[in-house]
Length: 131
Length: 296
Image (cartoon, rainbow over all chains, first blue to last red; front, side):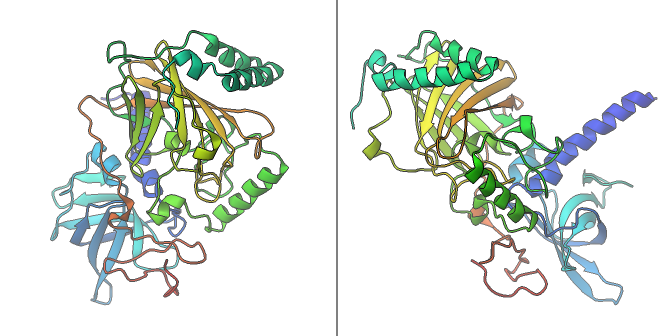
């Protein structure tokens, strides 16, 4: 069993790596002030498109709303170079994938957000995804 | 343009000696650390004639720490460039301190777009040394190239013994005009002719320099996994004294590759006429509520 202080150190390492590879990289190219860093939303839906592109990657997700309609969300992530080094791949998300995505939503209520973490149907996670 | 083959002429021209002495004089009157740093430049300069003796700077490198240009004066210490209320303390004169304060206000109002957000230009030197993406330091006998993913950009440093060209052959460019020399495994290069405020920034807190800036960089590999750049910045228009900034770069695992960060590929965050950064959906429509026009 992992000792408490070792676990603590490990958690800090994970947090530091996650922050350096995901959080900050969203802001590498432009202001990130359109996103609410204090709030997260959890979106459960289907990947429509994964744009593995510069200056940022985008995940288009189709999310059923409470009213029964399907809403398309635009989730902005980091830069491919740094995401690749953190373990992402161009096919990390594929159209049709069932996903749960955690994001900092746009402050003005638009259907966009900054990627925080995701869990795929096979249980693998990317970024910061707490169960 | 006059090319000088003799390194003694090029490196120790009268102009350079005067500049060097002036710099040393400033250093002596300043902190002892800076004086010691500059005095160490008095060693014998070298010009490489072949790849033999070229230091091993191979590999892919990434800056250690956040994209804050001068972390030693950062307030708050854990602050991040682009966040509200974060600043550094370069030795700006009153006029440039006011310019910096105005930029800090614009950052807080989300109206300080990073020039890189326009997806058309290089980061520019010395921001080259303060980027989130990876770098390569390519050493040839007659030139050193600093290649960055962001931009992507190239900074060329001529080490073939030439001096800077005459003043009337220099105009502001993103990478600037750099000439350098070797002292052992340390490359010392001087950069002038940079773009400066209005077209380039040093980081997203709002730091800028003028076109009069002169940056002397000592670049060396301090250990197997670390490169270090010590920059001494002079700017008679913006600074009251020399500004010393040190940056370090960690070596990424063997076999790492460099990638394009080609901003124009799919930029869904254009900047409108007011300086506001917008967000587009997958079809190019503005997502932001209440914004329909003015996209540049």
